[in-house]
Image (tube, rainbow, N blue to C red; front, side, top):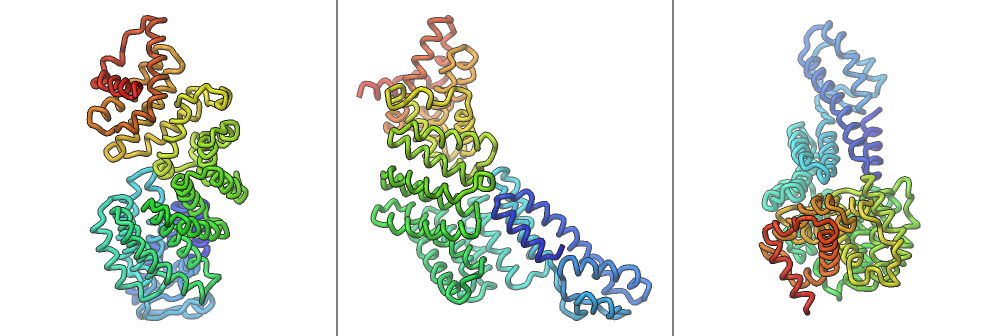
Length: 497
């Protein structure tokens, strides 16, 4: 399998979200590339025919396998006839495929970082290795841009990310695809610094380059994909500003990106576009249109091939119907999302992004509307269902230091779900979740709006708690939690309002 074939397969796997498989293919290719470099050094320095006879055949086989067209060799018996048959030129230009392979494997490991943060460090090592492997201008630029991405996403070290991009721009050339990629990454770094206005400036510059490249090479898939990424990021930045006047512009940018990702069968791009469309609908509060848009988008996905996309889209669809109090329509979509989460067909990164949607779903299930005619009992998931696993997975995806409020809210909803079973064991299981709520109250991480939203879940939980104490004489275990009484007082005040 040639390098071109390897990279083609890797790109297909990446578009399908199969990063573990892509990493494995690249690791095998890197072993072959390392062996090639090792033999090339031996043969290059050889002055006797015996060394050539022992190694040259394997060298040519590896060169053919990795699609290496030029080999730098010194003197000795060059066996030119063998090289000619394979179409390989013996010259003083040394080509090493490892830089590109290291860059590609680093990218797959970066995408796996959402599941295991150790992959960010492994990715950084790969990009450093690419820079140490005699890279050409293109691979050097890619390595520096990729390093910036790791410092942005995996490390949150934004100054280092900017410095990496300064280095990258010395290799990209002007108004090239790499130039657009570097500008796009600069925009993402500013977005990470919560400076969306600066981010928009760089996204627009990258978009202008993309438009020029599309005008000259409209069929180039790499250009199409980069343009799709740029307009997705631009639309996302407009949404982050929460400026109602720019929502329509954001919506059109995201729809254009979605169309590009659909044509390329880029599941990662499809999912990211859907995530932003969901946030746009929340700003608009137009859930009827949102549900219709999601239903249309769902027709473009294959449930067997686009599992991650189906999971995310199903969650948005279910949430939109819940906002309309159409639980009958919401239930099957939410069940799909919860089942796909349990089967690990949705990433931790997605769950972290979806936290507000998750909290809104939990709020509606726990609100005073629970049990009314429009909330049919069969539409509400039973305790210990995949819905509970979904809540737990979302908690696990959040940062304990940065997302204290969200973790506390989801913990209360999950504690409410557990105590609905009514026996002593589940109240003991609920203690860690109640402790998170109490800690958030003591550190002022919850506000009045949160208490109002959580009121339904808290009242349900306390009702179950008191009934269990009355019926089974269970000890008042929650009272021993530090801050529990203060939590009680906060909710009493809200209930009086």
